[in-house]
Length: 88
Ligand SMILES: [Zn+2]
Image 1 (cartoon, rainbow, N blue to C red):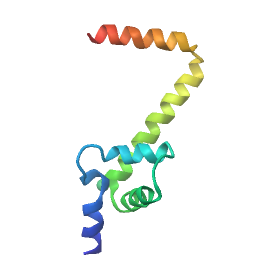
Image 2 (image 1 turned 60 degrees about the horizontal axis):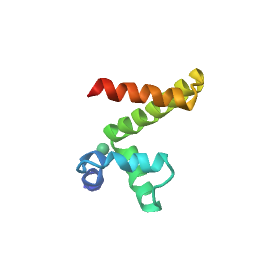
Image 3 (image 1 turned 30 degrees about the vertical axis):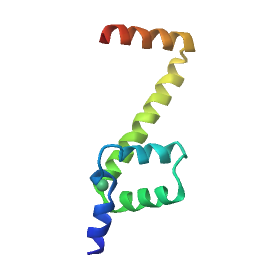
């Protein structure tokens, strides 16, 4: 029964926007209550843990690639601009 309670509160069971809680936590913008909710979810749900780890890996990869390339801001912006042009 306890597990069912936790499961209903689970981040991955919530409507879209639930993963933003994880983002809030990684940005150190989550409230104490939100942090508790996230900790419970991470400890009880493999799916939430996976979401969390994916988010961390993504952020780490982004940071590392940016640090390794040492691209100046204007180059990054030019690339972003190009991507946007290609997407249209
Ligand atoms: Zn979950």
